[in-house]
Image (cartoon, helix red, strand yellow):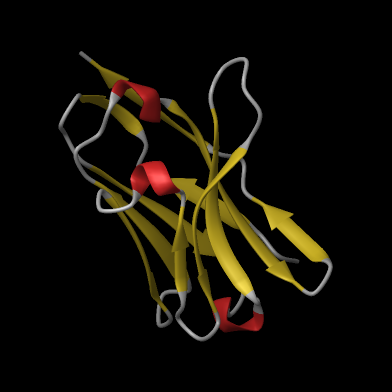
Length: 115
């Protein structure tokens, strides 16, 4: 059974950094893409970043240059390094993995950025 477990969220001041981790229960290279989404209160869930099986990365425009997605195949873990955090980055961050039409989600981890 595929499980995605996020960790690394927390409370941080503006300008600070956090690194989120998404531990996957199976080989991450079995997925076409593993990525991060976020959902702020009262807002729809939005794409943040992804990395595909070939290593290509994509980012939401507002996080480009601040966030970096990476992976460690030996640990079946995908990371999201978040620097220069802003108030508007506050959200629950979810890890998502997909293979063809199958999509798997983690439970999410809260990131709160305070002034």
